[in-house]
Length: 309
Image (cartoon, helix red, strand yellow):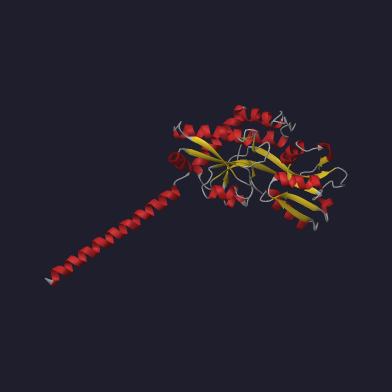
């Protein structure tokens, strides 16, 4: 009798272990599946594409007079949404815009809050450790803007000066490096957004502002006295703006890059550029009057991922 009970208990123990092991295996399976599931699967399950954007980042993204996300990058992402629908063979997928900041945009992507970040994000080595990027949709140059009569003509004239830029931008790290490299001993102020950065220059709280040239053009276009704000001639560096994607999601990047390539080769990207950079925009009819640069034209002849040096 005792032998039968012992055998029964041993069988029960084996069965219990098997069930327990099976549960662990199932947990591990679904955990691995969740990790492996990419952005396309996420979108298919939720029937929603979450688009991150910043305001103001004119003309790339901003809230228009109807409080809707608008801009060059927003228009591009509208095309990307249609390409994702075609890839998934789903017409019921909807796009939702979510406002982010220069500080929160990467964490929003990493945490799965957004699927595309459509503003004016530059490709940098540091950011590539956390996220991926589409093919470039714009080539910018980081420049300095000052008030008329400041005597500042370049980086060497910023010794002991107060410089402002927007927190979390590539301009922040660039100036920190230049400040140290050239022993400028300049004071760096960090604003929460581009509008605040620009207000510091206009009010005299800062002697100079460092940002991407297109952002400076757009900020100056809305200034009270734009003629009194001068852009320095030399570019500190060139950098591409791309759509931010989840890191190492190759299947999703393939879909996105294919559509961006189509937009460039079909001429649709040129039309979008003329709409946002060479024509009146916003309720105030602001016109940047910014022709496409030679570097951008050359780059678009052969679209490819930007090679960092």
